[in-house]
Image 1 (cartoon, rainbow, N blue to C red):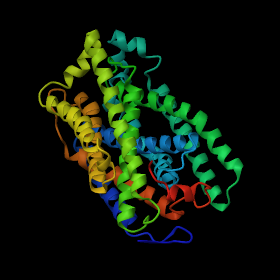
Image 2: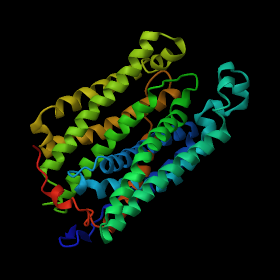
Image 3: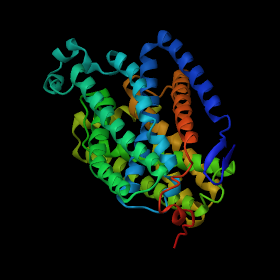
Length: 394
């Protein structure tokens, strides 16, 4: 794996795409067999995997827009990496189709006879109905695809020659884009995850999903940046200083995620309203109790302690280890959100949880890597590129 140091383009892109593509094909094929064995398990496992990988692209889209909005310099060398992750969203849109086919298994409000027998679902039926659900999903993906394509195409145009108008364009896209992003991610999390138990509701749920998404995107960027550095691709481009800032952001969002999670739990516990507390009770029954405790200590306490010091944020082994752990526990968190609707009395790990993650993950990395190696590894004509390469934390 090598790049031309004058053009910053790959001369040898390695075997990442080939290996990821093979894993993705095998994982999806085996998962398809699982559909015929246990369709309910398949759709719940598939939804968990789908939201997991899509949420990394959500976080990368937010990272890119935030970079442009604050005119960041340190992150210029990481921008092409985040852009290549966010541009996977249009590709992932195709993989939402199985979720639509599985609505009957996933969402009990999609059954007219169930709604007819449930007063609460009848009151929510103007929003929770199949036609409106599909229309909203199409709108969400339409907005995300528009934002990612506009930002990505403008970035590639900048590689041909920078103009001041491009900087203004990045901000014109990002300013309303962040607002649209906040709304669409919030409502998508309501639709796809919260409505799995349509009797339950939380106004903090969108912020909870966003914080986890951005955290997982930061972790993915750290892992990929460390991999590229280890292969010598970004030597002299991405330094310990950049990893230090990534570590600071990751540490901050470990705390922010915990704040959102605790705020949601505390307000529901304090109000003690049965329709709200039952959701947490399901996640405290049987072996779900240990999964809940794993999230408390694994999603917050452990990464908090790992990254609390300056030295840890500047140590690549510690930082990449923490990032890898965050990526794992993020899946545990989503599993904890989805699976109690299927396995109400105790946690149950299915082989389809593994194959759907491998299948969608292989497809995700295959598409991401092919996009990444097709362009220069950094935005070569960005006027702040040199300042970013020589960035030093003060």
